[in-house]
Length: 434
Image 1 (tube, helix red, strand yellow):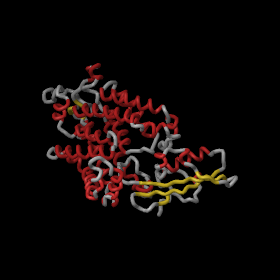
Image 2 (tube, helix red, strand yellow):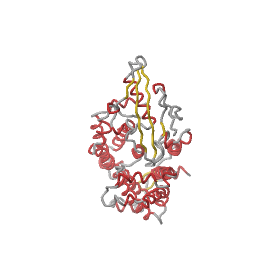
Image 3 (cartoon, helix red, strand yellow):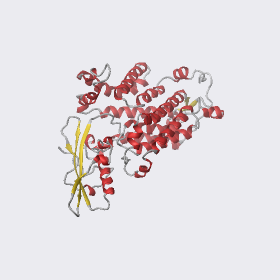
Image 4 (cartoon, one colour):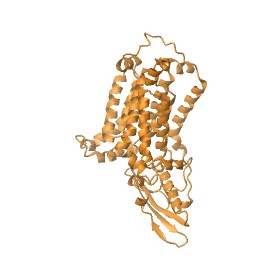
């Protein structure tokens, strides 16, 4: 039964339209990152980047090479949009994007992680079977249908993202609109809406609207009676986020996803009017059941369900410790600040000196030092720089979450050269106490 459902031939119009939108958006994301100075600030100017732990080899790519890297990514994006050498283009973009994602964390964004997942999914989807240069060059590729697992996978992935995003908001600082109030302080000078965004009732409205939107938008889009209403709400929500929070292509990517919720005839007639309807042309394509693909989809879904709750199995508060925060759809949940000052002591001469962070890190990177993994990585960087000396490293470091009292990250008397990073359980050198 499940296999028949997954491999049933269905109209592929939604996937074709999404591929075109997706290719355009990833091209804009790639070249826009250069144009806005993001590549320069995050991947070129820093002395080193805070890559994901264990992937230090990516440091060799950091620097001016990243301009060319993102130019090539944009070219891959055009290939995806046009359906030109689609497999090569999407796999190329996926690899390039994955490397860029893994080589830095000072500008981490859950949306970047979502794009990693979408890229991986698009690698196995037959998104080039219609309205593509590949088909124009090879008519045997042309198809009006796709296996139904494409629809199911995308909608399931969206449901997981939105559901966990809603559940993550169910904590006191969000429910009392404190987080929104903090976010809106920097928006006071916005044209026309700046003053409105400072009103308490607006903060409460945004907080609770965000919860209900994330929790209900997928079911509302799936139900035919509420679909148009849900699309209108989605249009408002994502355009509002684009204007107020300026979060790149994500709002527009989210709107592009809605093509998978509307009847295929609506999508076909609106966007692909020359494409034959399956009502007129009965599909002859039969997709064989592939057990390995069924197992793969099941494992993918299981991982997506488990990853966002892994922090419950770590003996720490994820809001403070960040352990289990990434890849869990905990989006824009808190405002954090930190203060970190490192002291190096020469154990042979007993001389001490404070580290000037400006000698090592950009201002943006310095703001990330309150994250334990970034803190640990910088300690390793200092150890490497002073490897020929017998030193101890100490730090005065505290973190502030929303309006709560600050908490100390580590003991100021702890020699940080001895601390180890433990990725699968809480790190016992973390204090994070009042």
